[in-house]
Length: 202
Length: 230
Ligand SMILES: Nc1ncnc2c1ncn2[C@@H]1O[C@H](COP(=O)(O)OP(=O)(O)OP(=O)(O)O)[C@@H](O)[C@H]1O
Ligand SMILES: [Mg+2]
Image (cartoon, helix red, strand yellow):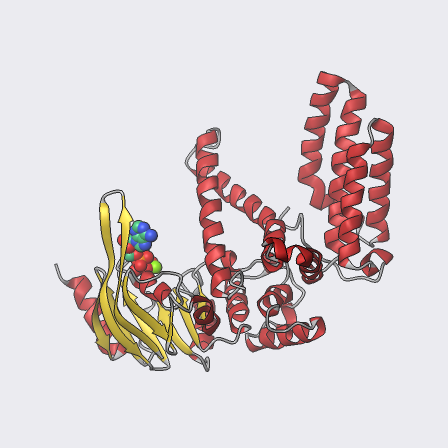
């Protein structure tokens, strides 16, 4: 699960060739469409479209499945809950949209080098510089968020192992408090490391 | 050249002010300076002073004539810093991307940036890992990559705070050999006394003070005596 996001796979597909900026725009539009459309039918269509995109991008099916394995478990739980609470059409709609969007995001990261994303975000935000926005910083923050997710998952796994070693795996406190402390501690360390590389000073 | 001029650090704690570093005056111009001392003695504080991550509460710290408080960004461009935990220092998905991140400011052209990043990776023996995920590296390789990320900014001084503490013997050797062979001035905080004696000068820090400053072998003897004393 550590490579849930951010793993670029070089290739020559159409999707690889769309420049990062427009591609980010397309991803946002796709998300907006998913939010705007309602009902199970549209969710299924979006899911099929997303799956097709992973194939167009040349992403191996097995690897993609492995990346979303954790999410599939969550999806089943959500689907069961929604079916019970609000009926199956809502369940299909919610879970279909969720998976479709995550897959679309995976397609984006698999076909776009981070360096290009940074440049695109910087360029896109340049007009806002006059309003006090610092494009380099926002771009850096953007990529850090992408990078932080696998890091936090890794920390969660370590924390759970540590709690288990002390027979505390059922205590939410023994899991959440150290997770929060470590995540914040690590964020500080990363901040220091970035400052020491002269990033964020601009 | 690094100068501390009556530099002191005090932090506010819930129990009132705590002196973390007593006023310290030093000039470091040897190529390789080691800093040793017990846990909590103030080594990291001293190290962090050198690139402005910690600001002196009184006195001054200057690197190459630049004040770390007044000219923070310029000092940080000049002073690289390697931390203990390589995981916290790596922020991009692949090795090449991580090094390229350091170059974004200085090398505008993408192809040139990639070429330069490959050169820097090669300088730490990681050229074959360019497109490898940073998660897939060993601890020693991660620390080498963190070093590459710093070397890419082309600093004049490198400060390393226990860079080998999390590494096994073999990786400690690799990382230490690389650090000690840098053309940059090196300030190395370490608990590894074998490394300390390979430097040109060593400081012993104890209870927020530099209690010995001089020949590394003598410094190590001094430190051992301190620990042995009741
Ligand atoms: N911001 C702070 N707030 C409170 N206490 C601090 C702060 N910074 C440092 N200290 C305290 O100052 C002392 C020296 O810390 P420092 O990190 O410099 O020690 P060190 O010699 O690097 O130790 P170690 O070998 O464990 O890394 C410690 O007792 C530490 O708890
Ligand atoms: Mg320390």
